[in-house]
Image 1: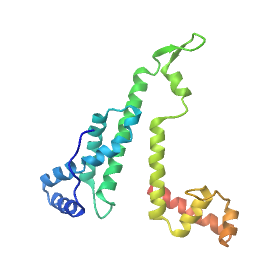
Image 2: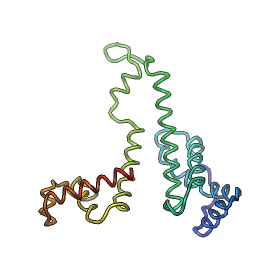
Image 3: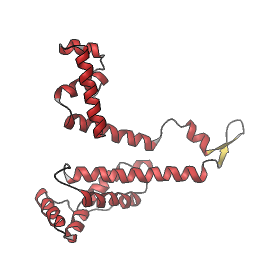
Image 4: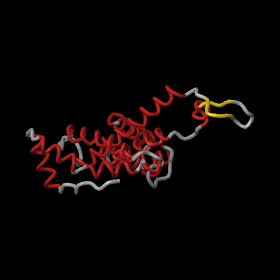
Length: 205
């Protein structure tokens, strides 16, 4: 991939964000241009799947533009963190659209014959495929989001109980009764904490 402008320092970024907030469109352009390296970094993950790097950067840049336009430093984390999610979302939308289009256009088109000489179509291959690349990427994205929410939304006790209950991180999966014995509390209390924690995560998802 081609080289990109050097990223802004934290102080420079804060200054340009403030200028853009005041209506300075040149500041917006600079914020986008100086974060293109981030787009390349996110897009690089998908190059090994045979994707075209230039197309990924073009689509990812749309996500970056949206990120700069909607970023709120009072609600979001760092601009880079927020922008990375927007870029990845835009790329996932591209893959979903391609998947949908290919199914609509050529789902039943014959693509060859099987060992017995019977004609097979793309749908036969898709239905027998165990791993869906787009779904796998979405799952990985959701897992990352789950761990972020665990750290930022739940109390220490809620985190501990969910990690033990579902074997998250380096914890071994335990029953509610085993967790209760380990923490010296009742099973019904463990159940109540688990239920409340899951409800918190569900609301934020």
